[in-house]
Amino acid sequence: MNEKLIEKYARAIACAGANISKGEEVVIYSSVETYGFARVLAKECYLAGASAVRVDFRDDELTKLSCE
Image (tube, one colour):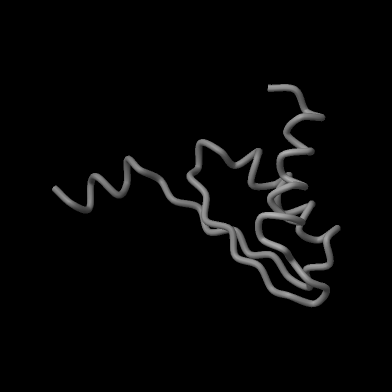
């Protein structure tokens, strides 16, 4: 996917979807397969005014193992 389009999508999520205000703390839940987008989204959250952004990654393969 085009990098500029990814940035626009992340900006829309941070500013309109999540409506982040200055000073807010943000938690992003992401699969390990989409770590690149999580990084871009975290950056946009900071640009929108977030004071802290935590990214919690999930690995579907490890989750499956814990259920077996």
